[in-house]
Length: 214
Image 1: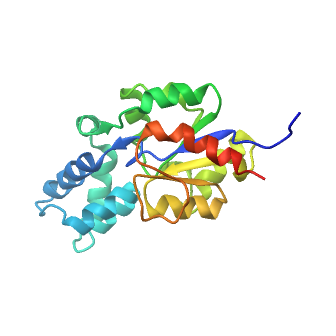
Image 2: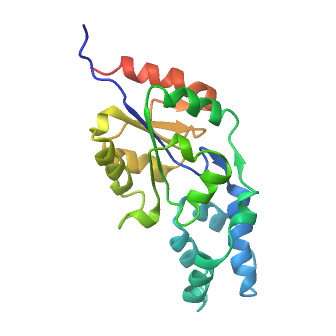
């Protein structure tokens, strides 16, 4: 009988993996700018807010103004529900989660802040995840490994028995720092041997990763 270690937990990023949220992010942060009669984001700012925490995003897009504190206060109290409607759930996600739930422990590590719980709830995903760590749950958001380390501690697992699925360099750096194997979702530029283009490929890649465990 084999005592070979296997992958026991799968941890997901939110934006760019479970959801195509680029348009939701654009609409939300442009709404904040418009509130203070400022022009919409440019392409570089759009790319930044897609990976950063809410607070860092506001700080960045308001960096040339005196409105940061007021804008941050407004961000924390504005109703995000209309913008959730702009988030497109990744095809095949729910089917995948149902399959994974029977074999793995599931978690979320995201740089979203006060919106993640409602995003999961409105899309019927809350039940799949034992633990969700947002930027509000850590002192140091991604790419610092704290979010992943908290999840590993909760599961009682070493990093080698978990996998993190992300789409950005921030996610990759987070996994590297936490010593957690990484699957790049729809991003060929990340330096990992494990890459997928859709949810349908993830189960096969997990099995491939397990075979490579010494």
